[in-house]
Amino acid sequence: MEPMRAILLPGAVLPAQDAYGALIEALGADVQAVAKDLELYADEEPPPGWSLDTEVGGVQREADAREWETFHLVGYSGGGAAALAFAAKYPERLLSLALLEPAWAGTWDWSPAHAEVWKKYEQLETLPPEQIMPAFMRLGVKPDVVLPPPPPGPPPPWMARRPAGIKAFLRTFRSYDLDRERLAAFRPPVFCALGGLSNPDDYGEIAGRLARVFFPDFHLEVFPQRHHFDPPHRIEPVRLAELLRRHWEQAEGRG
Image (cartoon, one colour):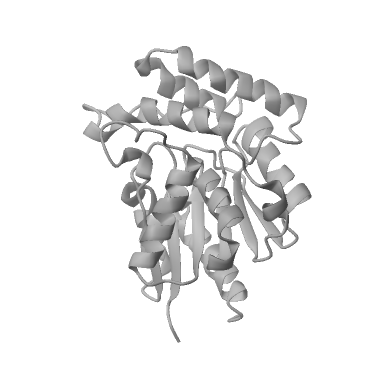
């Protein structure tokens, strides 16, 4: 039996291997899992005209280079938004979709509370670079969550590019036309992971809206002690690997 094939997209902060190394190990040798870095960080500055379509093209090139006609796609946070965009444009290439707290899922049917959260996200663009990351992290969790301090020592060189990357995501979320009708027609199974300590008016609202509006075959798994910045793919990789393998096996008719 051929191995299962998956492309994994990270969020706006960690490089793909740092984000997914533990999960890939937990998935096992019979899964060909590729941690693909975002096109957003291919150079020192975001590419001119970068949008979610840039990431869609990057996923397509990665799959084509590996001669994968079909595959499973996993996306976390901003990578989850890019995975949704890919599913809308190329549904025929996906065996399944897995969304790990996607950062955005279109501009329709927002609750008033979700709209208020996004007003605060838009204010991040006015902040100096050194203030963007702490403010960004605070918005993603419940008010009583204590966020971890930065690691000791100087930040890694790639961290200097992240404030501009977060701003680029915010800009494309304002203007990107995510095709609602094509998403509603998406038939492969969809898995969604949600942290119980994440902001319910942000990631919780998105997960509920995806289940309610789009996907007929949708499974939501809540990780009660996790939030957006200690996500299950890093903190509970064995449990998430088991859930993803089950999701993929069912999608391929192996279960």
